[in-house]
Image (tube, rainbow, N blue to C red; front, top):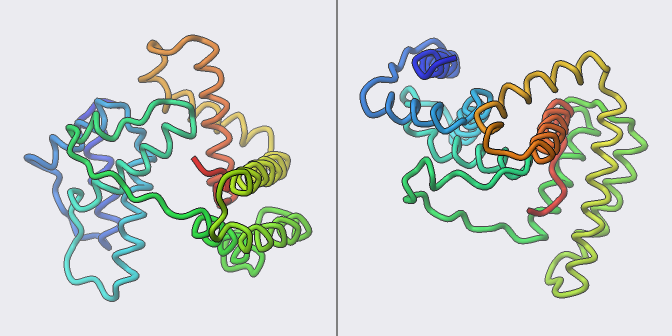
Length: 233
């Protein structure tokens, strides 16, 4: 889609999130969203950024006013950075934000493990979509619980051992999620990933493109299964 269609799609999605209240994307807001389109930000990344903003907004209590797309910019750029790192592309936040975006404070290793643990516990309890065998979740939850105690104050080799173990656990969860995904679904995700990466294809060597495509599919599988990312970037 062209930039105008991209902006209208974002506007329609924002309208749905605002319970039908139409907030037009015009003027500087239109230029901002058009910049996302021209920079190759996938539409689903914009939607995920909007969702992330609304999650925090709802958590503060009853909404008092419609949300404008400008309020969601930081979350959209955060998700775009996460997507680019996941598929092996360089970070693009400052390219879009004119170099003025603030640097996010990195969470501690213990906080990362605790947040991932809470997500998997919620999956096992049924409050999140459950797509993995209970025995796998129980195994990984037990291991994360053990690592959480070690992560507080871990330094040097001890910290690296935790990071290595998180990478192993992350690969295990992803492998189980992929095995539970049908071939038709994977083919659909591959097609979507190719569309999302199209703006970057000409800039990438073929082998890097293939790696990025595979990484994008893995990310999509992870999102469908609502898995946390255990690897610390």
